[in-house]
Picture (cartoon, helix red, strand yellow):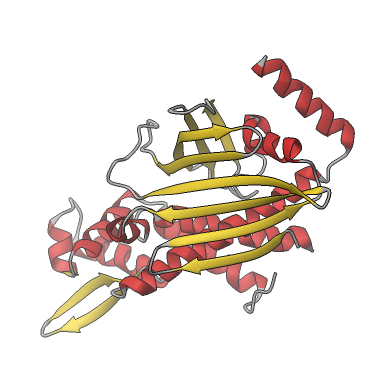
Amino acid sequence: MSVTSLDKDPDNLTLTLVADFAAPAERVWQLWADPRQLERWWGPPSHPATVEEHDLTPGGDVTYFMTGPQGEKYRGWWRVATVDAPRSLEFTDGFADEDGVPNAAMPTTANRVTLTERDGGTRMEMRAVFDTREQMDQLMTMGMDEGMREAAGQMDAILAAG
Amino acid sequence: MVVDEGVEEAEARTDRLFQALADTTRRDILRRCVREDLSVSRLAEAYPMSFAAVQKHVAVLQRAGLVVKERRGREQLVRADPDALGRARRALDGLEAAWRGRVERMSGLLAEAPETESEAQQSTEGRSR
């Protein structure tokens, strides 16, 4: 399994994940930096992502939508904070309305990703922090869309793992 | 990855959740119920549809596990999960599931045939330089 460790801290609304990949950091970085590769893993197979804007520079935006089995679209966005290729990336991600406009009333997650080469592979550390508890509540409402996609992602991963 | 429930059961649950959230009215009902507990009749006042139609929407949300109905006096109140920490846990569980799936897919892409990989890299380089 690629996931080496995972920690959930409900009091601080933080998820920390460590994954090890058998590839150089530059290659792992491409999964983030190339929109065509990003869209192959960001959304679960049942809700594939289509990346539209992809500006991986400080202050830049990444915009995407996921398409469900009945053609329904779920839009999301990233706002990039810091980039240090191929070592680290910080961004906030959130939801958008049908026109792709970031929905300020919706929860956002602050993410920090770091890549470190070790033992001939790459260790990826990912920390995701939900903004506030109020937003957590919102996540459980309309934001549950995300939770649903995630549940689907897990299922797909299980099925793919056979 | 260990999942206690059967794959079909989990899929059915996911379907129910997606279906519940695929509707604008139901998402709006959820939003309102997170802010405050509301009776079905209060909810029904907010929409240009019958009480029965709103009740049906609430039932869909209930089956998906997004809201619970609680009798208080003569009223049936609809509310979202009341436990903030429980919500936090569930949200983190969702995020965990998402990232486990993502990491698996990332691994899968990294394991793909080298020619696909180099093509992808070339196309990236072509775009960014």
